[in-house]
Length: 72
View 1 (tube, helix red, strand yellow):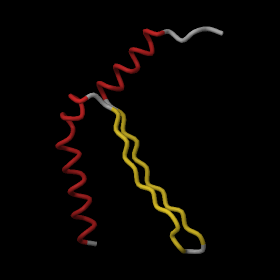
View 2: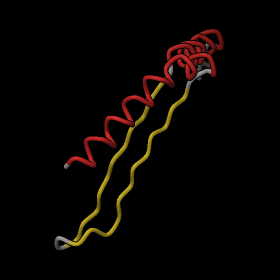
View 3: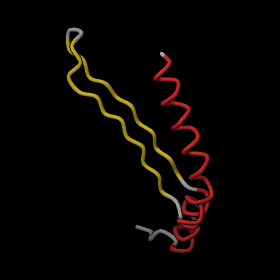
């Protein structure tokens, strides 16, 4: 069985930390119209520099969602 190339793994890790990865999940479990479980998760993997670069924009999006939810 061939070993994975460590340089390619390092390149992938460098790219993920440079660009960042966001996983945004919203799941709701209902049974007969009764909500049993709601899961909302946001996972961000990025370097500190990348996070700080986008943190202000993320805060604007979250504020817009809260404002829209309050108006509804």
